[in-house]
Image (cartoon, rainbow, N blue to C red; front, side):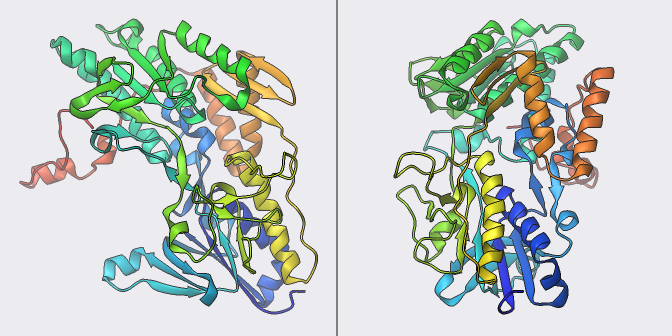
Length: 454
């Protein structure tokens, strides 16, 4: 039994937000039924994106709708508010939220009051003031960006196949990826694999015509899988004619020309930016303490330091790593986010019931990464794997972690069908502008450049 009625506000519907609300929904089942507890989830999108599957969605191995988990289905006993939290005044226990309705009506933001606050807004792409990046760069953090990138890559192959201008052809077939972490390496590996397969259906294109470039500012890629597996990944990518440029930065991509710090210049119509993330801007609009890097200062019990009834985890929180040297924080990755969410949900329930809180500690399981169909690297429980075994472990691990049995079954079915039939090589770029044809027929102008996407 909780000591008094509790209104719990969860800001964010990602890993931490969804799993925390799911945990609370289970632990407070009786209290929710009796009206002694209330859980509200504020999220910009009505779904949680399982980001490890974004590269496979971009490659066409998984349908986009199976990469996301609808929050209203998995959280039937929570109130899901689709909107953006603009500010939080924890001293007053209020959060300012704009919703689709307030924007449509031109009304002022809503004020939500709460008793317990969970801040889990996640992170946003960390960009640098690179000339031309805002105009020509493509992110890889959402399912919309993943599918848009797939359509864009196939569209560039269509452009190259239908032009006689060597400059346009060369730029269309040059793909630059900035960032050698999980997102950049897996996205490049899957899309290169997909494009190489797609090239067989073009009468005047071969896989060798495509130029793939990975730019990384440090001296190694995939640091999570260890130095040896990182070197193997570089060797594997270079064997596939991917230029891996270590210790190199993107200086400019203005005028569709990627200029690198080593002086190389690549005319290109595709610059994919995956060079890290930073805490969500909402954290700066709160009265809660933050670190120098902008993350919330938290305790090992996942409370915000010095503030009762405020909790945080995941990318937004600097949680002490009790299994490492003093002063070390947990890495902002999905493995920690899911585990922290369970402890966070349990600790909120313990706090409401007057019980002692648990400390978050973890045992490092390892890391896996896919480099395309039947190719991967893994470093799990001290064992190093590469090639097909690592790729199989990557799929098995993430299939076990994707939420809901419904999603597991659908993803498994798609993988089975992909093994029986050929890849789909269709670009549906028109989905990004569904009204374009009708507007043109009605006498208007198309809201996009028909010569190619950005």
